[in-house]
Image (cartoon, rainbow, N blue to C red; front, side):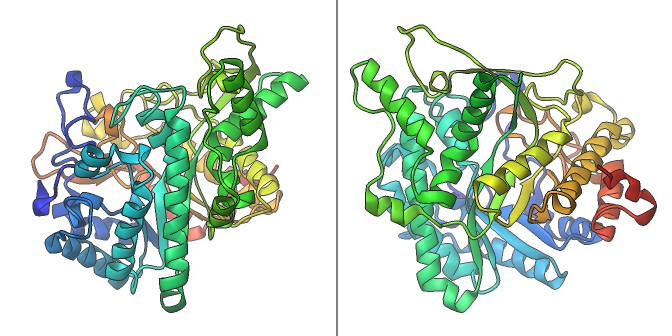
Length: 457
């Protein structure tokens, strides 16, 4: 591994055996920093979001052992970005827990992770904070809680859908809050930066206008986005509907409450620990109410009492969950405005993987019409949300700069606006049509004047 990086939780287990791929090289950004920053400069971006690999800087996960070569790599990346007038936004945790901490502490199921993560965050604030003003603690804690510990779809591949997702969310929220307070008290006075947590969600559209379906759609949003947003941006506690439902369902089975209860001190500690609302959004689901029999084994999914579907007329992407539904983004932004007191929002991920693109020859892949349509339509809905709905959207990041390793899906799903040839050891990058369109959007901070009709209601 590069720079003596120790294994992380996904080092050996992200790839299903049938994919016959690893992330050892991926798009090889480690050796192509100069080239990739040139791509960014050519696009005209003002920000670039990247993540620090915890085990690259702290091989065993603790500050007892520091990999100085790994630290230097990130220092050089930050320097190069700033030299090109690109502001770094740094994510501390993007799904890769040091394997040593998983083995020793059972990872995010253990409350000791709160202090361990804080030590890591503090190390990064000290090492990089003099030149980094935008920090993210966790990218999509929903993924670690539900997919990794509930459904076993990603490392550490645990399958405990009844209680583990709730336990992990509890620990990660406390870890986020502690890192926020550490930054606020020890580093913000001098560094003058901002820190938040990236939350992901689909938009949940009610199948009918019935009260039952509207309530189900609301539960869908609360169990996905509100699960983390309500504690951070409202009152330090879970959404009310989640608290009452999980307690009721636990009592019905004669077991202790599966949802950890925050103390009053913890609520005060968590409340207000987001300097901005960081949002990842890709798609929409249709939601309807669903009743379950009394004898059902209540868990994170059945607690919601709903069923998800999609409209067969929607344009589908490569993953089963991805559809081009730009109107869903505008609805979601308005929902966030109403629920969370009109926060400043930065869309930190939004993008599209064209179905079958990984099987195309390069020249065909470069003509990514579907991605262009997705990108322009979603940006257009963001502009509507700003202009007509009064939503305070302050930034937009497309996912992704280039084709890359998409976790457990390997290289099958290509989200990049730059094509990467993974069969070539040099991993050459080539801009797709979407890169040229995105460059134009950045230049005009929207669309050029002759396309203004696209922003009409």
